[in-house]
Image (cartoon, rainbow over all chains, first blue to last red; front, side, top):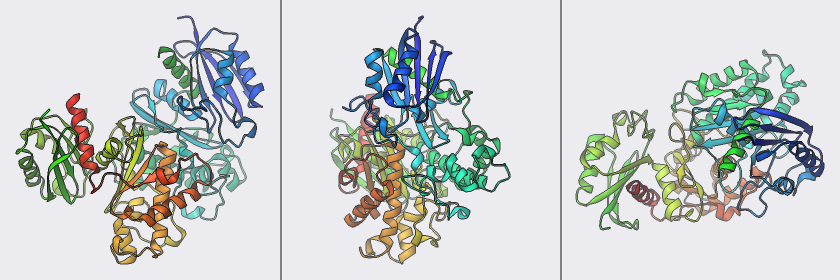
Amino acid sequence: MSKLLGSIEAGGTKFVCAVGNMNFEVQDTAVFPTGNPEETMAKAIEFFSNYEIAAIGIGSFGPVDVNPNSEKYGEILATPKLEWRGFNILKALKKQLDVPVFLTTDVNSSAFGEYTKGAAQEDNSCVYYTVGTGIGGGAIQNGEFIGGFTHTEMGHAYVKRHPLDADFKGVCPSHGADCLEGLASGPSLQARTGLRGEKVGEEHDVWAIEAYYIAQLAFNTRLNFAPERIIFGGGVMQQDHLMEKVRAIFKELNNGYVDVPNLDTYIINPAIPGNGSATIGNFALALRELKK
Amino acid sequence: MSKLLGSIEAGGTKFVCAVGNMNFEVQDTAVFPTGNPEETMAKAIEFFSNYEIAAIGIGSFGPVDVNPNSEKYGEILATPKLEWRGFNILKALKKQLDVPVFLTTDVNSSAFGEYTKGAAQEDNSCVYYTVGTGIGGGAIQNGEFIGGFTHTEMGHAYVKRHPLDADFKGVCPSHGADCLEGLASGPSLQARTGLRGEKVGEEHDVWAIEAYYIAQLAFNTRLNFAPERIIFGGGVMQQDHLMEKVRAIFKELNNGYVDVPNLDTYIINPAIPGNGSATIGNFALALRELKK
């Protein structure tokens, strides 16, 4: 086959578009800020118009209607990005590029990339989280995304407070300091320290607090899904000392209760370099859609 | 078909065995306390020996190896019931009754019963919890149980403390007052009030605390699985005032963030009467196994 696959990673701050071959090797990319919907989608379509595209995978910020049986399938729902609310990303694309399209959330795309060609490529199940500006997650079991009447929203789960963090006000606009995103996203680190996460030294006390929340997320994930692999991407997690702390606290939280694989290979970073998990995932989802 | 289906609900305190027809109608039952494994299984086998059984579904207390590809498939694992640790419930049954057997956890069986003939019979996904002596859950999506390298253990998830409950020591032997089972199982109500849950009056403050934890469980379940239905069984949940409190607190916890169906029909009790969900689930799983 000489045709190509397309990927749109539609993030809240930027769009990453890519064209790849049938081996999921990137041939070209275009990155631009997420502006108003019409202009942004026009840029994506212009990029793809240079290639003979057979199918496209989209991983979108949300909430987004990903249910093919829904009337609003493809529509961006109650996002704080008001210009995008009610915009149908799938229809806008299909109007110009009439090829098979698979639409899911950005974190589901990343999960699928790691499942197909990354850290979970030998597994039948995995859960992927991104911990950055926000916290989000996607789960896969036997090739299918976990999700029922709509997609999951794992980053806003309620967790136990760290005793030394009791007075922190949190940064989640909806849940304050009650949910994971409010307590453990990148902006929460900045709110506590005045510094961006990557500037906060390894010896800072805030890392013990951060690790406590991420370890709870990992432990609850083991309980809820029993996945074969738990993968943490996103800017905050790119620090070996943090991953080590998370594993150590996970062990304390479990207290020998549930079976877990070796934590050094169970709770890990993505294997696909350069934040490329979502792009690979979108290529794989595009190909799957094409073969249907 | 004139043959019959068998169900074993292997609980930590009692075994409920049943024989049903191909419409999942119960024809006979036997209930006996969970004694030592050999004696208990002999009673179950004796009960079934009066019937021509085509296949059996087992819903077992855990942890139990439910992975057909595992060497220990069928073995009861690190249970506090020491006599049962290392006992292979599946092998013990198959030795005497060589019919197709499907083995899962007791809560998965209940979930499957409600999915097949109960509150979720028109849905493609549901999560079932029991809140009683312990807390456990089972999730189904498109007819398959959620679970990867082993079964889930949803009842031990970490949650946010209720502010008026900060000093409670909890009742979970593994996690004290850190996990749901430690904070919200039946024994936790008794530890706080000195009374069994069903004797605690509706006006008691403990119900606001209990509802807060169960509402968190329901909210986190919406986030993690987005199931079409969330079903709460078990002794503690058989009180309308509690279910109403749970729905009201769920709404507060969500704070308008995620889409949810009408809570009055989303967060509900089982539809199968008389604690019969697991039996119906086992019949349905037995029949599915028979048809394979």
